[in-house]
Image: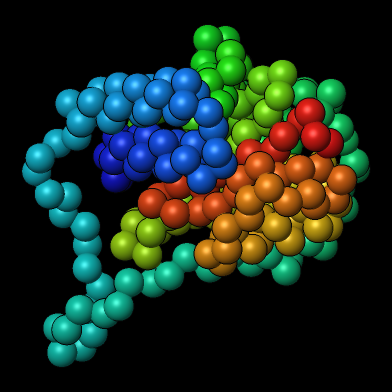
Length: 217
């Protein structure tokens, strides 16, 4: 199993770059960069310097085979019926993602507003989080790498399917297509889709995020 402190470091880096991309004012940038720096420092102490011994697939001659990419079967996900919900349906949003494991009422959204974070996995597992504030709804989840274990890939695909379902509930079929797009490498920024404004959505550095601006919906 991958040491998921690495993911925390990557998420901190993404948090800072997201603030710059979206044009936060200087005071917010400073807070975000300070929080990201603290997250990175804390995570660094948890990262083992020893390399992980991941099994490597080989062919009959003993040559290493290319890592198997993660395949998201989006076409089958779209066949499942969903019922529309709104930002007011917090319990239904949580239910769409799974069972809440921990709740943090003193968290921050990406713009440093006070928020509540609902975590759907234990801290040592590939994460899936829902962060809810007055202004934003954020979903973040672990984005598997081709070199990850089969278990990590399956969990990552399961997370993506849950987020895909929630996006369809909140934004209709266009919401589902948006999740499929970011899984394929696209970045969505400041775009209204299915009646909701996507502030930022992307998958990179072992992390996917979907940030919706509730005030603009």
